[in-house]
Amino acid sequence: MDEMYGEFLNVAKRLNSEFNIIPLLYGSLGLKKVTNVDFCPDDIDILIPELYLENKWNDFKKTIEMLEYTLVDLHEHKFVKKRFKIAFASIEDLESFAGIDIEHIENHCENGTRYKLLNIEEYLEVYTQSSKDGYRREKNNNKDLLKIEKIKLLLNK
Image 1 (cartoon, rainbow, N blue to C red):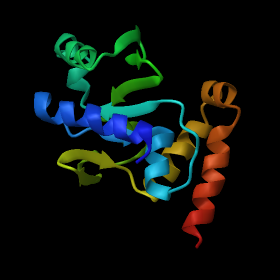
Image 2 (image 1 turned 30 degrees about the vertical axis):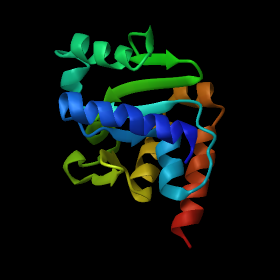
Image 3 (image 1 turned 120 degrees about the horizontal axis):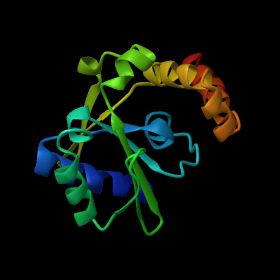
């Protein structure tokens, strides 16, 4: 098992047990899981209910810190632990950002750990929207466009 994915499962298991959250594995690591193509993720992106990033932030932050993570960016809800970087964002934003109905995102279970994962078509929507963002284009050297091309190739098989 991929080390980064294993770490995601570790965090997801804690979120399942502490808060009954079923987190969404997002970003390049999620896309890797869906496509079996290594997009060389450099962090673990996780979407959770906004409630935990707003009203329940202090309890949520303490739980992540109990997993030996240190908060490094409050605005991005980004934590670091040794070689792992993990960032949390609101799952509710998927609807307005990419038109994805969060109620219909597929649930998965691995070794008793529950999590959500977008399908390849939903990832196409996400990266298509992301590629329109000037900041992301500059920051990511058009990596989103490469992901879109690869997703389209996979969908045409």
